Length: 181
Image (cartoon, rainbow, N blue to C red; front, top):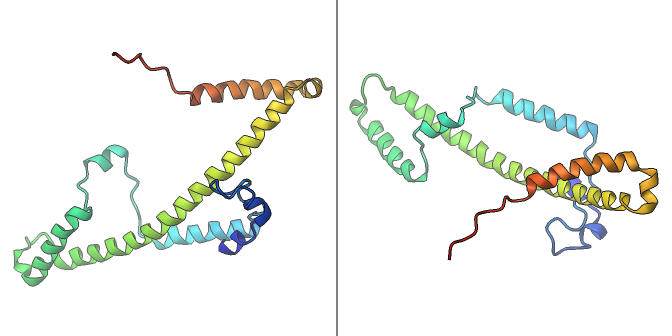
């Protein structure tokens, strides 16, 4: 997909270079059906090549002890101690299993880092494109409310008016209690 990024129409993309993504984000970019199928196949291959992964609930995620940047030093010291003297391990714990899990964590963390970058850029792209489409659709709706358009498009305008009311009500923050002085 990087080759596609070079296909962005620079005249429209640079029309408003001060805003994120330019005036018309991804104005001349499209994903062909063949490219989409290739991407989806690649994602499926990724799923197939990764080990079985759990799908934890939010409460399960909360309960589990986490190995983060601060606790990683602790874990590394314990692993080094176990390697230096395997006798410190209870018989129920296999040093080989612990070492293989540590390697798996390193490998999966590397994959996670690369996927996080792609996901972040994908999220930003979807946000920008959606924002542009929604902005254009609000303009269309405003034009539809003019007298010239009203007669031709009463049904569509009524349907959009109903939907626009619901969207605006949800997005407006609720009034808060007055501040005490």
